[in-house]
Every structure is written in structure tokens, then in C-alpha cells.
Length: 529
Ligand SMILES: Cc1cc2nc3c(=O)[nH]c(=O)nc-3n(C[C@H](O)[C@H](O)[C@H](O)COP(=O)(O)OP(=O)(O)OC[C@H]3O[C@@H](n4cnc5c(N)ncnc54)[C@H](O)[C@@H]3O)c2cc1C
Image (cartoon, rainbow, N blue to C red):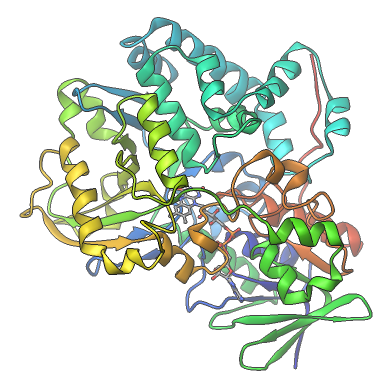
């Protein structure tokens, strides 16, 4: 038996964020990872050809500059940095037109104004409100344990706060319709909202301000998404902690109602003298602990957890030359765009794609976003090549069963490539050196906590957001079992690369054990105007 102050299950970026903060607070931490590499949803592999790097999951770090961990943990000193491309996003359409979002606000508005001056003006206004003025509120909402609605309402007052909260009256499509009038601009924003796995249900509109605030804040991690977990690992190891790979946790051990450690699949027991934290999904965490330890309503909710109606199927390509989009004749800036959406021409097609995903059908309208990372950071590919990917939305259970992804792989590659070729004129066979399809089934195989290929460890629907993520009794990352904490994406404002659940758990553990912080916590949310 090996003993540490704390044991953390899973070396994704959230588990490692918690470990890094607590190492700074003087604790001896063990992070246990079942895979041979750290990273989880921030992993980088070379699945096409040696030297062609692909981020298997998170590629777009959204608003990460505003994350307290970037500053508190001095990630740049441990080898992590990002590039924010000047041309951030584009949506290309079959008629050859495209909408471009730049880093520069006026350049973005100029692009939008080619379709609608009113939408360009709205974009400018929303940017001033959400990306500038209300940014501190959005950061404090993300990096503090979610509050019950009545307490939140007490802390937010005035017309702007009311407008902010009024987004909760909308679903995904109506919130975009509320703000924008042009069909192509609406198409871009509904696709963008879906990317973060918001489902089109009443109330989902509440995520709009936070998502909108980052639309011009997309960054690519230099050298690969894995640079983040590697930097965090160095911080843990610079303390007295260990990050142990090939360590599959099977059981969370409790004694007299208190979490005491974990048992690995090889039988080894690792003791957490102060705490055990789980950076995997809440459902598996409950099952590993024993359901009986959780109240009935928690059990019921977690056993009916909604993983999401859609996942992503990624086609990674090793190329001789980068994809060149036909829409460059309309706006040459698409040649420099980082995140590129295509496949959908109007909002009805977006709706249709998600209906098909929900029905477990390979979508007729294949749509989604992708990038050619080596164009932004040449270290993603050898000097004479490029590494690119496109990840259209797709269901986990396709055409009747998840296994169909394995059975019909070649057919799905062809369908995806056919659509990509409609937009990129140079993706012929000569240009493609190698391809690799990473399906929703593969997502689950690589990270079993991403059940059913769940991109966010659980869909963004109102019953799974804020205080409800995963349940009001667990959302502050503390569990009903003493010494057991949640710090993965299904808790504490989690989902996507933001480190929020790890950060919130770190502050809770520091408070619970009376430790000393060398960082200043993000203030509690407050807005009065
Ligand atoms: C295809 C895809 C694309 C995505 N793109 C983006 C994007 O561009 N931008 C973005 O912000 N987000 C994106 N996401 C979401 C993002 O990757 C995740 O939300 C995030 O990485 C989750 O981080 P985490 O630390 O909470 O969990 P994870 O990264 O999943 O970490 C959990 C870790 O626990 C390990 N583990 C599981 N079970 C056990 C066990 N029993 N014992 C020990 N270890 C275990 C896993 O192997 C994993 O390493 C994407 C997700 C997918 C699937």
C-alpha cells in the first residue's frame, strides 16, 4: 500500500489542474491514469503518419487566457503556450460565400456587414457587453462553485443582468434568432453553439453569453493539446507528487463513511490520507464507490444521465498541401482562418443534422468544423506537409448500433471526404498521404469516461448545467461521502478545456483542510448596474 495526502483519479487536464494547485499548497498528491499517456481529452497522437500531430479531442482552446490557472500556475514556465490566430473562424457555404470572424472586431464586423449591417452592429454591441464589460462576471461564474438560482439572482441586479438571465427563456435556435437576422450568420452561430454540445432544448439559451464572449478568443496549443497536461504534470512533479500512468482505478475505498483511497485493477491499494478526488464522470464515480453511499435522488439522476444526442466523428488527414477553400474567391481571408465550419447552408439544415443525430442516423447533412493546425503552428507536421482534420457531428449509435462505426469505416471516410471536397478544391487523392477516422466509439474506447462518445462528459441541458451539474448535492465538487470530491467535466461548470472543476475542487479542498493558498481565488459572481 502506498500513501499520499490525496489521490486523484484521471490525468486529464482537470485532475491535473487540481493536483497542480494542491502541490502548490504543499500536499503530496498521486494522480492515477489508466492510459499510458496523460491528457485524456487533451491528448495528441500521430495517427496518420509519424510527425503529423493530431489533437484527438480538444483542439480549440476557447477563452483559455482568462482561466485563472494560466496565470496562477505560470503554465508558460512549464512549457505551455498558445497561438491566437488573427483570423479566428470562418463558415463557408456551397454558393461560394463565407462569413469570417477575425481577432480584430472591426474586421469581423466588415465581414458580417457583407450579409447584414444590422447583424454587424449587433455583433459589435454583444462583443462590448459580453467579451469586455461582463467578462469578469462570466469568469467568476465559471470558476466558482455554481450557486442556487435564488442566491444568484440576489447577486445580479439591474437591466443588463436581467437581459443576461433572460437567455434562459430560449432554446439554442431561438436565442440565435433573437440576436441575428441573416440566415448565414444564424447558421454560423447555431453551429457554433452546438459545437459545445448544447442541445436544442428550452433553457439551453443561457449558455449564449458565455459562448459568445469567446467567439474571438480561440487559441491553438503550441505543439499539441497534450502540452497542457504535460505542463501540469511538471508542476505536480516539481512538488512531491506523482503522476502514474497505466493505473486503472477500479474501486474507491471508504471506511466509516469516509473516502480513504482507491484500488487499482492489479489489486494495488493507494491510500489518500486526506481525500480522494475523481476527475472522471460522476456516474462511474458513484458506481466505483457503491451506489448505496449516495442519496436516492442523486442515484436516480446519475443513473439517467444524458450523455448527449451527438458526438463527433473526426477525419484526420496527413497532406502534402493545406486545404484551399473555394470561398477564397469571396474572401481571401479564409486562407488564414483557424476554425472552419462547413456542410450546412441554412439553419434548417443545422436543425436536420441534429435531428438525424438524435435519431441515431448518419446525418444526410454532414456538417461541423475543423482546422489545419500546421498552418498555424508548423510543429504539427513535417516541413513538407500539413496536418488537418474535420469533425462533423455524428451519433454514437449509428444506423442502429455503435459497432457500425467499425464495420463501415471505409464508407464513412468516403462520405466525409466527399463533403469536405465540395468546399476544398485541392483535396484530391494525390494530396492525401494518409487518413485516420476517429469515431465516437473510439472516443469512448480511449476515454471510458466519455461514455457514448460524450464530448462534454454529459450534455449541456438545463437539468445538467450550473447547480444541476451533476446534481445540487454534488455541484460544488464535494460529495455526500466525506473526503470524496468530484473534479471532472460532469461537475462544477465543467465541459471543455477550462479547468473549472479542477480549480473549484482545489479551492474547496484548501478550505476544508485549512491549507494556505499562494493564489487569490476568483471573486464570487456579482453584478449591479
Ligand atoms: C472529439 C472531441 C473534440 C473535442 N474538442 C474540444 C475542443 O476543441 N475544445 C474544448 O474545449 N473541448 C473539446 N472537447 C471536450 C474536452 O476534450 C473535454 O471536455 C475535456 O478534455 C475533459 O477534461 P477532463 O479533465 O474533465 O476529463 P478527461 O480529459 O476525460 O480526463 C479523464 C481522465 O481519466 C482517465 N480515466 C478514466 N477512467 C479511469 C479509471 N478508471 N482509472 C484511471 N483513469 C481513468 C481517462 O483516461 C482520462 O485521461 C472535445 C471532446 C471530444 C471527444
